[in-house]
Image (tube, rainbow, N blue to C red):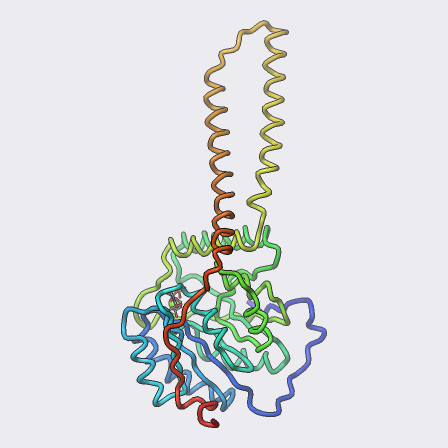
Length: 336
Ligand code: UDP
Ligand code: MG
């Protein structure tokens, strides 16, 4: 698989001229990742200095039940790692938003804390940023490690999304990405509460490039994204970026009405011409059952959109911060 560049804007691509080493903020959303972070943070502190001497790691503790927060605070004496602790588990999308809202870097890196996103890619991402790209994202080149059913469903989801969504959401592109500060600024301005970040990244646009990478196995622990959480995220994705599920009922309604009219005409004609009496109940039962099902389905879809509207008008914040502990090792803390 080769790199994927956004078509628009790339004519304006211009290598960046740096006056000083850019400040990098690396955001790690973490839910029960104490063991993984003990590997991940030292590893990042070996790799990030190759990009810039001015870097900070920001761990967003998404209401973990294990020692995640304690581990991060303990490490903050040794490494430039800060802790942003949310008041409970808000989910990965909210944790990433919290990280983006608190990131101070000229460029921001988002990656998982479970070692699944290879740190070797960061250098490649950074080179593309230097070339002038505002957003560099990883594309999963290979999903053979996943269950075939999950792979199939993911494929169907991306297909449905690409046909109906108002923006092009790159298939197999995840949350592993590097962003320029102006992309982060654009993302912060989006007030949506029920978020699918992948969609929002695509929505903001800017000069983007996708780079294929291979996902590593999880270092320790288990994934928090089971079928239920994934399908809820998929539903958020579809309802947030497409109104096709609402519109489709108009077309289905027209087709069913036409069919019903045709059938009525057929019944009238056959009674008049052939004089056959009409054994009505089987067709009635089938017709009522079919229409009942269709109506419930369409009401359900309406309900899905209404529940989104409900969530938005309540206006509750996407996340709440309980503690923000800055490391004394961050370059900004040292220069103060
Ligand atoms: N995560 C989070 N909040 C959650 C669930 C997950 O911040 O409620 C983080 C998790 O710690 C990890 C990343 O999101 O850094 C990806 O989660 P996971 O590995 O469970 O998902 P998968 O890699 O299977 O998609
Ligand atoms: Mg993972």
